[in-house]
Amino acid sequence: MKYYKIYGVVILYHPEPNVLKNIGTYINGIERLYVIDNSEIKDLELIEKIKDLSTKITYIDNNGNKGIACALNIGAQLAIEDGATWILTMDQDSRFEKESLQVLIKWITSNDTEKVGIISPYHLINNISYKSEDRVIDKLTVITSGNLLNLEVYKKIGPFEEKYFIDSVDHEYCLRLRKNAFLIKVH
Image (tube, rainbow, N blue to C red):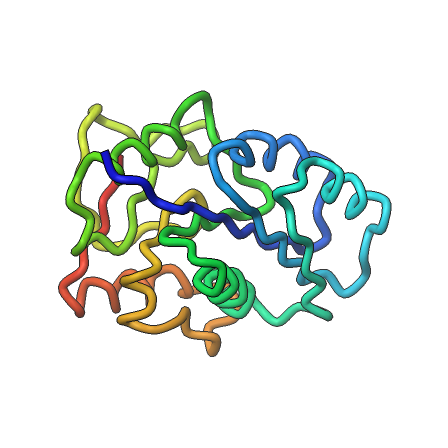
C-alpha cells in the first residue's frame, strides 16, 4: 500500500457556524487544511473557533473575494510547496458522511493513480443520492467539493482557470484533465 501526503483546502465566503461541524468530518483524514477566506467582512469569533479546531489548520485571509479558482490555486500551490501529493478540495457547506473520505484515500493508496487527475465521492445533493452501485466509475466532470486532486497531475496541466470566478471552474478543469488523457473517477 502506497503512502500519500494528503492536504486539504476549504474556501470560506461569509460562513455559517455549521462550517465547524463540516470541517470536523474530514480534518482527521488529512495532514493539513488550508482555510482560504474570501469574505470581505470577517466573522472574527468564528475564525478563532475554526483555528482552534486543530493544529492542522492554516487560516489565510484572501483579502476579499477573488473567486473559487484563485482560492483553490492558493491551496494547491501551498500544498505542493509543503510536499503534498494530493489535495482535498472542499466547500464550506460540504461534509463527509461516515468513512467516505477514508474510502477515497484507501482507493488511491491501493490503485495505480498515475493517470488519475481526480477521485471524487458520490455526492448527496438536496438529500438525493447519486450513488447507484458500490463501484468506481469514470466521469466526464464532477463538482469540486469532496474531491481528491492529484497534485502531480495539477503541476502538468496547470492551475484552475481564474477567469471563471465561481461557475464553470470545476467543469473547465475536468474537461482539461480529460483533454490531456487524465481520468476522473467516482467512488
